[in-house]
Image (cartoon, rainbow, N blue to C red):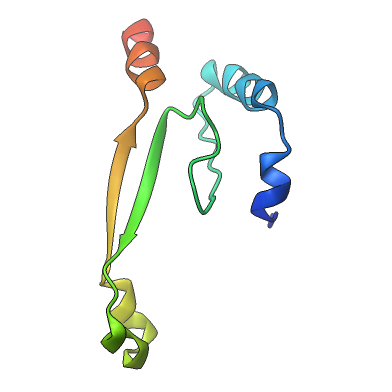
Length: 86
């Protein structure tokens, strides 16, 4: 499902919280891809950091993918949730 970022910003944080509470009891992941952090109660965030230069404009798409560095960020809520589940 594709949704513009401005529409995602209109969704109240209480709705995201309800989604999280529903999924807490299940072995299910709810993945939302956004151009910036928008969901305050996310357990973790996958941040894709591009390292592009002007020369990147001339590179093939496959090579550009290699220039993106993934980084996982745990939110402060995530550590509390993990502690509760243990």
